[in-house]
Image (cartoon, rainbow, N blue to C red; front, side, top):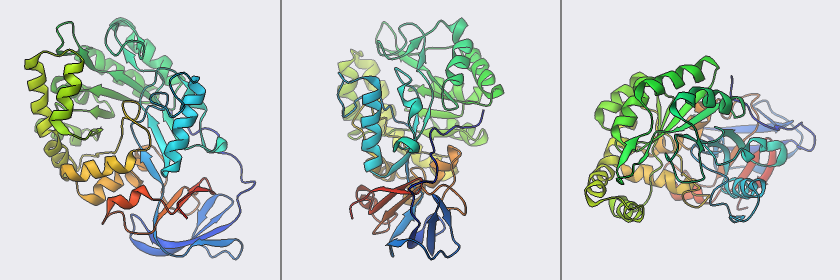
Length: 376
């Protein structure tokens, strides 16, 4: 099953446009024309010049975003209102594509450029065993029914399935939700149907089991070690760490709020301390490290901050930017700024590879050939 994009819309109402600037990642200054909602490098006399200088990206991407949660619309709004408000906030920040790896509902599946929202790739509902995730968020299924449930979520999603790989046991310590052989069976089931599968994994043993099972992406991966890097690279498995500010101190406060015992807090805090260096080593080795904010656990519209956190962890600035733009789009099956591609474009006045703070202020935002925002 190829990734699907919802409501791309027709060409009506998209006036020709001309933009000149440094096209990334090619790092070449070019004239770019948008005609009938698509890019072309062939000169076109119609339309106006929207920008004649700057840095051109094929949009920003948040690869881990839960639109239905922590929405600007508030918790009392309907699911449809929540996902639209969240998507609108992301669009305002220049995010033109979103992967939603799991949701308490399926409301995001209808979003797309035809309705004026970013391209959204869903994974249906979170899948967890009974008691295996925060109450009320996941679709809870027994282990023996997991493959069937994964097939059902895949059929209703944007080509993805998301498993909750571990959670707190009755003793307050992290434990695996599924046996390694079950993970391998799920991966085979999803892949045979042409889909991809992601896993929420906090502890090293679950990262290891998912990598060995052939999952397509590891979400969070706080307990990942150097051995996991080699296996991710060999298996072409992406890592979406979803870094958070404050490091171990911030994690300790969160962990204690969940009732974790002191020894587990210390154990996980040690992993959090070394997590940035493992992420940087993974990126340097060639593992595809992608930017995801985990919006829903925190506020929406934070992709620029996630890029900064990756850089502070030691990831090369261009690699960090790629993980929130052209490389993330490629991961989702979307083109960049290419001849004939749908015109998703964000223009910045300065080079975001030099100063990631520039990402906070898009100069021009174009979604599917239509200007939809920007600071000027």
